[in-house]
Length: 416
Ligand SMILES: Cc1cc2nc3c(=O)[nH]c(=O)nc-3n(C[C@H](O)[C@H](O)[C@H](O)COP(=O)(O)OP(=O)(O)OC[C@H]3O[C@@H](n4cnc5c(N)ncnc54)[C@H](O)[C@@H]3O)c2cc1C
Image 1: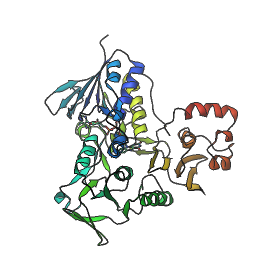
Image 2 (image 1 turned 90 degrees about the vertical axis):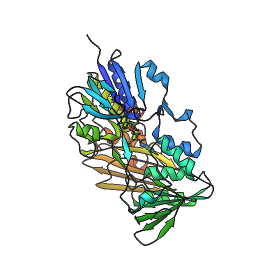
Image 3 (image 1 turned 30 degrees about the vertical axis):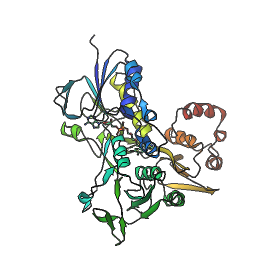
Image 4 (image 1 turned 45 degrees about the vertical axis):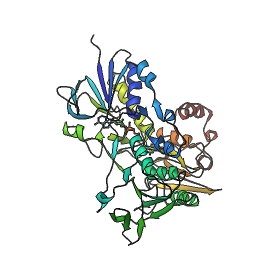
């Protein structure tokens, strides 16, 4: 029997998950990974920690050369895929190379969005903050006392601001929406995070979108102005789907995938920030652009590509991090009925509906959030549980002994 040729585009969270998934089911097939970046396989969320000096170059590595060697993977770096021929099962590279495959995973992630703000092209000292290259570019632009304006108060902009507090610069975050971290936190939790960062010296302009730029000045809709020497673009990302779309794959915001990561094209799977699957906390189709999700989607796709039973049907958005020592964790949907608990610098909001927990926000204290995450992923029925106890303290004691054992097995594997 001839060996299967697997081709993976992207060597980040989803690509690595896919290698692990393939190798769990097929030790012999030929695996090639092609990646446009030439930085090795690194942890993208750590770029802000490299900027602050908390992580060095070695610490950026997610998987070293030994991982690729031990898994018999050929890694082609600095090579960009530009066209896919799904009938001929081959991938064309920008440098003219052609890679044949039997089964392909598209795990090309996302690219920073460039907001259509008049005058942006006149700002010469600007950079996105999405890759290790961007981080180095930003670092090179910083001069003592520089004023840095970060456009976008989402997770990326906030992590960048956190890192810049360790530099001799003045930082202002501009967010057009009424609150920072709008995709993950509600008004109250976002206000707590913002107040915490303000105490550490970060300035904010929230609920006032930038209307135009000149080379070193942002003019806001309100008429207010903000001068800057460096502009960081952190105004969202767009999934890298153009190659698959041109090849005929069904796409919405991302490439549409089923629970095993299959796209509408035969022999082609997708995973991670470029893919759109079902969020089991809402039942809706969504791009869940988060590291653990990319990893698990990639792994399910890898197993499926290798012919094993596979599916990642309990995908939900999950996020846990901290800014300047202020922890927060969120998962699932933020809709429907909710119960709020406040106390000692902490805020918790649990969302529920249809007899189960559907989402949560924890800010100021995110300890044991993984228990809530497990309840949401497993669609655990709330009847028979002491809801007040579950809300007050994410403790397994609210469950029967048998359920505690089952949940413990699951919680140990949860990232959050
Ligand atoms: C500053 C920052 C902080 C973050 N913090 C968090 C966090 O706290 N928690 C969290 O869960 N997530 C966080 N994220 C998001 C997280 O990094 C992403 O969800 C994750 O990296 C997605 O992994 P991926 O494998 O889908 O794609 P990516 O990590 O985007 O990797 C895509 C890969 O594809 C390659 N590629 C792209 N196009 C092509 C092409 N045409 N040909 C060949 N190769 C190509 C790229 O070179 C890259 O290697 C953060 C992101 C940033 C930028």
